[in-house]
Length: 348
Image (cartoon, rainbow, N blue to C red; front, side, top):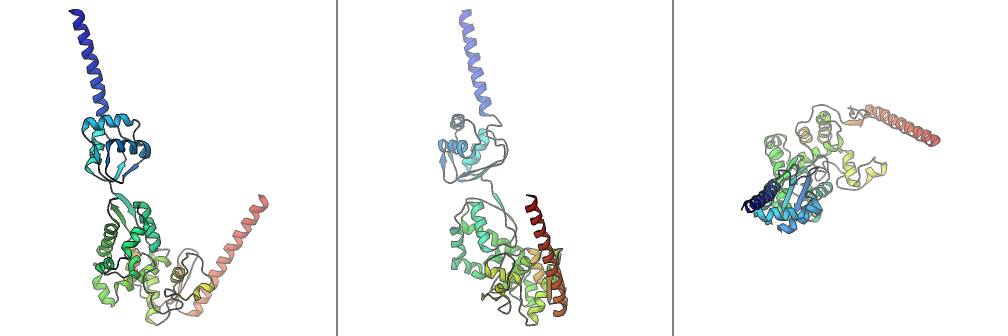
C-alpha cells in the first residue's frame, strides 16, 4: 500500500510538473517577440497552420511552429484576418493571436513631404502600402472621382498635402487618396476661402504659384519675398520666368542649359505668359501661405546666392551685376573642385 501511494504521488507530481510547464509556456509573456520592429502582412484570411508558417518563415518572430500550433489550438484561435500587424514588443500567445483573429490592425505611418511630383508620390504610396502603382493611377484618372472632388487632372498633384498619415493597409486606393485630399481641404481649401476671395484668385492659381515657390525656395523665411516677386511680374504683364517650371518641362531636376529655356512646353514660363496650367509639385503649408500673403516690395529680379538665399533687385542692371557675382562664384567652386580632383589623381 505504501508503495502504491508512493507511485501515485510520483505520478501526480509528474503530471503537475508537466501541466505547470505547459501552463507557463502557454502564458509566456515573451512567446512572440522580435529584436527589431517587424511587420506581419496577411494578404488573405489564413488558418493557424498558414499563420505559423508566415510567422516562422517570413516574419521570423517565432522559433517553434509546433508550439504555436499547440497554443493556438488550446486557446481556440484558429482563423486570422487580413491586415498589417506590428511586432514591436513582447506578446503572449493569447494576446497576439487574439489581435490577429479579431483583425485589430496596426496602421502604417507614411509621411508625404512637400515638393514632390505626382509620379514620385504615386511611386512612394505604392511602395509603402504595397499597392500596384497602376491601381493608384487608375483612381487618379477616374473622371467621376475627380468630378466629385472638383479637381482637374492638372491640379491633382497640388492636393497631396504634405503631412504624416496613419493609414490601414487594407484600405483600397480610393479611400487612401480620399484621406489625403480630405487633409488638403481641412488645412488649405476651407481655412483660406476668404483670402482667395480677397485676392480674386482661384485655389488652383494659388496652389500653382505655391508649388513653384516650394521648388524655388531653399529657406522657408524667404518664401513670402519670392512670392512677392512672382506676383509683381504677373501684375506687370511680364513672363513669370521661373526656373522650376523649366525643370518640370524637361522632366529633370538639374542645372538648366540655354536650350532648356526654349523648350516649347505649356509649363515653361519663359515661353508662355502667366501661370502654368497647374501645380508642378505638392506645396507645403508655408509655400501656400507665402502665395496667399506675398511680401510687399518692388523686386522683379532674383539670383541665387551661396548661402541658399537669393539676391533681389528692382532693375535689370542690378540683376546683371548680381548674376555676374553668382557666375564667378560657380566658376570658383568648379575650379576648386577640379583642383582637388587633380590632386587626388596625382596622389592616387
